[in-house]
Image 1 (cartoon, rainbow, N blue to C red):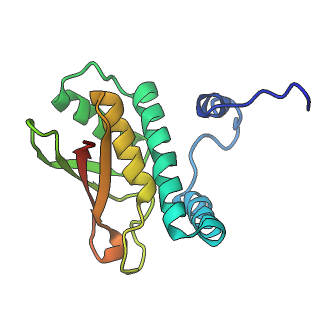
Image 2: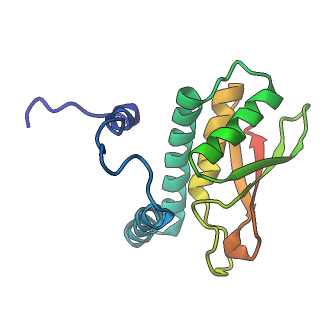
Amino acid sequence: MKNRKELSLADYMKAQENGRENLGTELPVAVYRLLEYSLREELSARFGKEEQIDIFRSAGFRAGTYFAEKYLDSSLELSEFTSQLQKRLEEFKMGVLRIEKFDEETGKMVLTVSEDADCSGLPLLGETVCNYDEGFLAGILTSYTGRVYNATEVNCWATGDRVCRFRADIEE
């Protein structure tokens, strides 16, 4: 196809609005995990685990930025914004978000996500696995604040916890 247009994330997301008249827009978590963990394995096999993690974080950041711009009102005060974010994540069945700590001076946060689509119910693996979520949360926070955030998962179902806990810091 000679005149093929390169599609963006926004283009692909628009296409989902009217394509499943019978089945609707929701998928079981198992289908999401088939996609996520098969990609994780394939990227690790081809490029190594560290590159796979970096790709997942970057993709999550891109998605988080899109999500914030499309589904959230960034003009809201922080407490209203986080409340809206919590509601949206539950509406999309992505997880239940809680803000454990927030330092107004530094912008540092500790957030938890329970019932996370990525990992809730996984067996003990001895390592965190929610790299996409790290990027997703960082993308949302960056979009909202205009300052570049990094998020790092410090607790996970895969490390024996019942929530995923993330530290979010402004990049220096």
